[in-house]
Length: 134
Image (cartoon, rainbow, N blue to C red; front, top):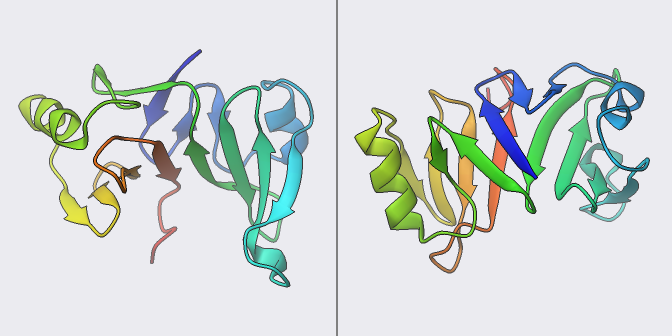
C-alpha cells in the first residue's frame, strides 16, 4: 500500500477533521485504541495495524494527526519510508522541499510532516493538520 502525504490535508483518502467512523470507511477494521501515556486520555491513538497507520483525534472527534509506519509514504514524488534519512532529505531538497533536523529525524513544518528516523533510517512519517504545533 502507498499513501500520498498531502500537506495539512491528510494522507491518501483520509483527511484531517474526519470522524473515526469516516476514517474507518477507508481502512481495514476499526483499529485498536490505546493510550500512549498512561492516564492521559488526550494521548489516545488508534492503531490500524493492517494499514500501518496510527490516527489521533481531537476532543471533538476530528482527525488531527496521522503517523504512517507501514505503507510506503510518498511526498513530492519521493518515497519516504524504509530509506536512509539523509538519502530521503537529499531527494526532498532536490525537489524543492527543505526542512531542518530534530532529535529523532527531520521536520518539514512548511509541509506539515516530520520524518522519524532515530537510527538513521526512516521508520515513520508524522503528518499533522495546520496549527497542530502552535
